[in-house]
Amino acid sequence: MSLSTAAPVLSVSPVVLSTPDRAVDLQIRVSAPMTGEELPIILLSHGQGHSNHLSSLNGYAPLVTFWAAHGFVVLQPTHLSSRTLNLASDHPEAPLYYRSRAEDMIRILDRLDEIEAAVPRLRGRLDRGKIAVAGHSMGGHTASLLLGARYTEPRDGTEVNLAEPRISAGILLAAPGRGGDAVTEFVAENYSFFLSTDFSAMATPALVVAGDKDTSTHLTVRGPEWHTDPYFLSPGRKTLLTLFDAEHGLGGISGYDVAETTDENPARVAAVQRLTWAYLRSELYPGDSAWQRASAELTGGPDPLGRVEAK
Image (cartoon, rainbow, N blue to C red; front, side):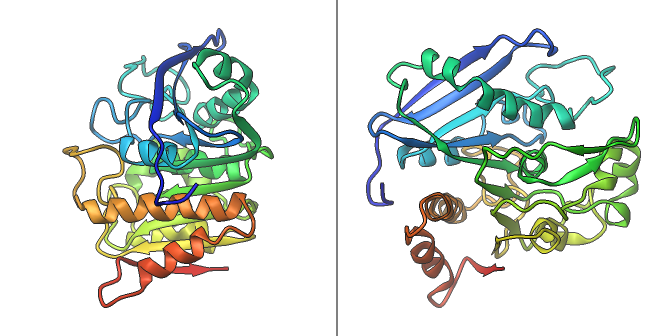
């Protein structure tokens, strides 16, 4: 599959997994190309934000449709933190359900047989040896946990390790950075799990995407560089894509023409589409030159959209 070819996309939702130990059953959107075999998988974790439906399986169409049209099967859960569910606030993890979100992704991988059976023309087409995770904003935190980041549970002081060995690569989009004195007093008081975020064991390869105008003043006192922490503070093979003039929406990746995008820019969204796809192609298929070509296009020319660095 290349950028010059795009397949029609089949999208089915909700695919419902019965989960008696969860507040509500887990609902998923499954998007896949109509053609192709041995399709790699992307688990996509939504962010939060102010809109009612972007924080659910109905968000992130600009990314989901592109990835699926170019050869990936994209699985999108509606996490318990979604505004669409309007759950009671007395759960100990409410309102962000920080651990539950990662457990949703693990549950999906455990039940791929059910998901295949529920979606027409999907059975037998998944490549279960090529699985990636992606997440935006709070979804980036979820993805980082599956890639190996850890935190200390505020309720009992235990270190939480949710690293998922079936995941081979990750995409962190405007993801939260470290805790401690980097977060605001509001975060410390309301989302205390952020205080202990630790990237020192996040060894799985990942592309960190950050906007150089993403100040996120309600979350951090450090400014845009906070969102680069998953790159600088983690071990292993990592790549950092910094997008010029991009704010938290990275041009509008969470949905088409959504009100909460403060930096709407179709060209920037197109760059995120191409570069995230190319990164995963080259990471999951060693020897594929998609990333080399796409990153050269981004940084070349008189008016580059961003810069790339790697370690």
